[in-house]
Image 1 (cartoon, rainbow, N blue to C red):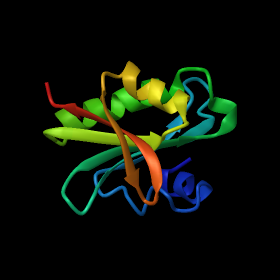
Image 2 (image 1 turned 90 degrees about the horizontal axis):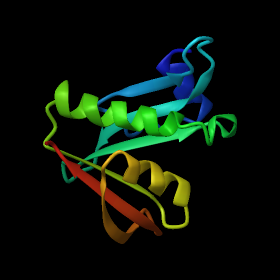
Image 3 (image 1 turned 30 degrees about the vertical axis):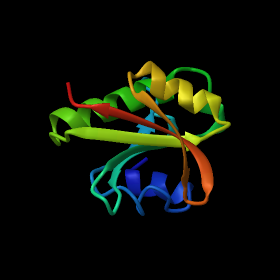
Length: 124
């Protein structure tokens, strides 16, 4: 599935934010579509890592693998100095993914009108 088709699956979520890349995430072996990952800029210049996965893909490590690859791509291919990510305060699974890939928890902020846990990672 192409990234554009994948983005349509989630209502254009990624295309609105993905000026540094929108990627369809598929399973090795059978290429089943699992979700999307994107890197996109905020108006202040910060670049966000974002992802969204189908429920059938939860709990298998796909988000962690994809997020790790997204950060590596941001730092190596795009030479970004820093990448941020955020998740709803009560989304412990997504916060766990971000911790596993070495992102630093920067606390809870109000983003887009809701309480979000914010993470950041600086290029090594």
